[in-house]
Length: 338
Image (cartoon, rainbow, N blue to C red):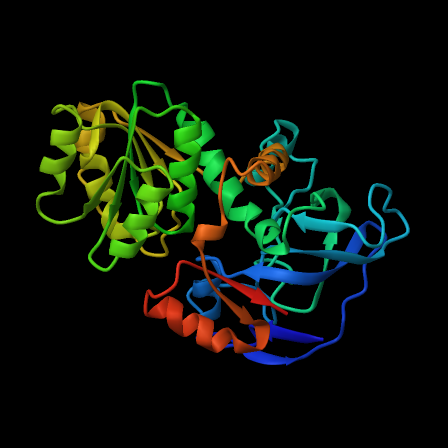
């Protein structure tokens, strides 16, 4: 089969033919129909994030089951499915507390084990979710980022009087906006940087009440939009360490900051303001099995719309072109078709 393989340390990858994997007793073999390029995939391909070598990345995907292991009970050949990324052990302290994303023995598809930048992939039955017949493969491949956004919004406990600021109008930020609107946020402000004008326009169409290009007047604008109080809840969906201080300063006293973007660089910040203003900071990682299930229903019912975020579709073999657009910041979400 054709696959994108991270086959060496440092920057780079190979597009080559590899053996089709065989499912273990508790696994299914999926023919990949659509797979999204996630912000997590980029540092893997560039050699910034350490992963086992060789590795096939890719974890936002949907497809059809073409083979099942001998112990698989709940799925059959022909099922249209999308798997969750987290493969938890089910035995450690955190798994038994229902916190599978914090599993002590966590494995993630496309990060620790081979993923879906390929024509076929195997995953354990326990992470697989069946898709409705009327859902497209592109929608199915979008459930993972929707669920990541959903998990962070649930963590924020948004109230009807809350003003929400979302830094980063990428796919996750755009899904946070839609879900925060569903949760009843009073006002939603989307913040981007110069060059994000089109993304911010899309943010408005998807539910943002206001948009801001971040500059020296950012705090003045947020203050004006919140009657001087600043934001009740702030989401950082940028994945940029340099934004942390700005995110903190956008929060009101006793406000909540949700960190969902993953940075690969250290940051510095004035921690004293966290103490003096009693800011609550929470990290949000991936999602639970139940989050994923609920997000399939949100997308199926069109309460969360994913199609506007899909800016490009390429064949898997043309991943070079896709990554070039991402580097140039000319794409929002790119879907690959193996």
